[in-house]
Amino acid sequence: MSKARSGLFPTSTANAKMLRATAYKAVHTMIDNYKGSKKPSMAIGAYDVKTGKIATAFAGEIPEKIHLELLKRAEMIGGVGTKGLSTKNTVGVCAEFHVVNDLLLSGSKISDIKLTHAIRPRTKEGRSYCINCKKMFSDLIK
Image (tube, rainbow, N blue to C red; front, side, top):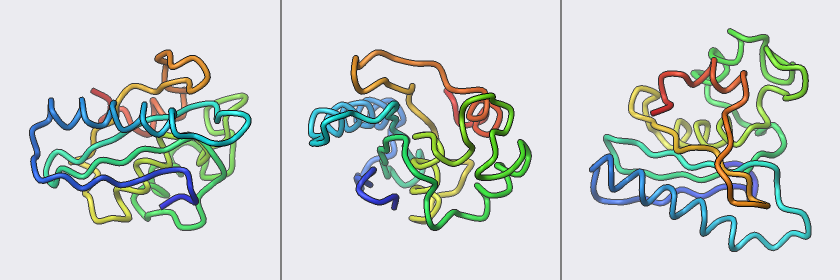
């Protein structure tokens, strides 16, 4: 898991609608419980439709350990640490990258992961995915 930026919430059901709602609630709880003086730029949740695992994450530093599947996806747009398709975002720092990585490292299959909408923690408003995340995770966005 990313350092102090995310959490996995095991659950016993794989009902997609309930998982999505639970993931949203977990993201808002994570934002509400944030103790830093400046909230991170973005937060997101994800869930595994087969196992029921839920993960949340803020945008942050590139994770120290990155799952091979995620490295392959990042290579499609230039690789981790590059700007990818963007002029301002670095591949590997987005909340989407962190939350997918956390689920993959916990044993989830990429085909079973779905993302919630991204949320700006300072305002709690929904935000669009960046162009890098749209490209890497188009199959996870629902």
